[in-house]
Length: 375
Image (cartoon, rainbow, N blue to C red; front, side):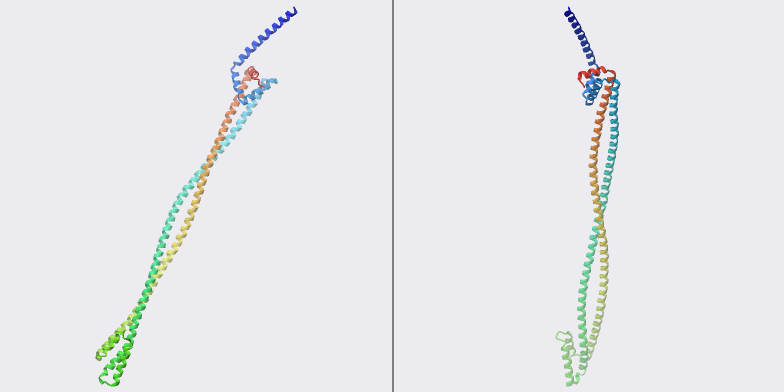
């Protein structure tokens, strides 16, 4: 009898347990089919979601109430929101700095471009000035060479003219000297011819002596022939010859004076011309030196401008390179910020979902934690 009663009791207990299990399974199926269950499955796949559910599981096991759990999640959400606000401010400052850097690089690039354009304009103008100065120097040197050639030619001509003058003057003086020697002898001859009719020994001897002295002038002297001829003439004819010889002698003396005057004038004229050439050459030399100094100054200025252009070109390249690098850095920082923002926004949404699920469907949370063995 006791055994039977015990058997009945066990069967009853088993029936109750089966019914409870069936009810539990039914409840579990209901909970599992709840949309929040799917949300929890999605949440647990996120690293932060998994940690949040672990924290909730610990709070539930420790007997914490819903309000405490929700408050904990609120604090966690507030912390994330605070970090996002902080990152928003940091990103705003970074993007502002990036814009400032981009503006600075743009300004540097524009300044470099302006410098390069200004240098190109000025160098072009300076190159033109250099060509002008070079042409002017070549022209002045050509003029100096021309004047130098003219001076050399004038000096050579003056030497030749002076040599010709000295030659003519020597010839004139020789002729004058000859006349100065001949005329006294001609007068003596004239006197002897007048006395020739007496045919005295003394007269013949004097005549012979005069003839000998005339002959000493040399066989090539043309006046000797004249004396030889006149010795046979009448006194009146000899007198006429003497007078003509005196006229020729005086004419020769006048020619010497005229030649000397012409030579002195030629010397003065030549000196004036040479002085004018010298002054012109001096002026050209000074102008050439001034032009050469201006040329050197212009070359130095051009070289300075070219150096300025090289520096501007280097600044342009450096600014472009720096701008590209900085733009890349700013883009990376922006992408990182956007990724972090998306990630944090997702985490905040996860916490919000967990809060809502806990507040409205705590049984679903407990069932999910139990099923997933979250602890």
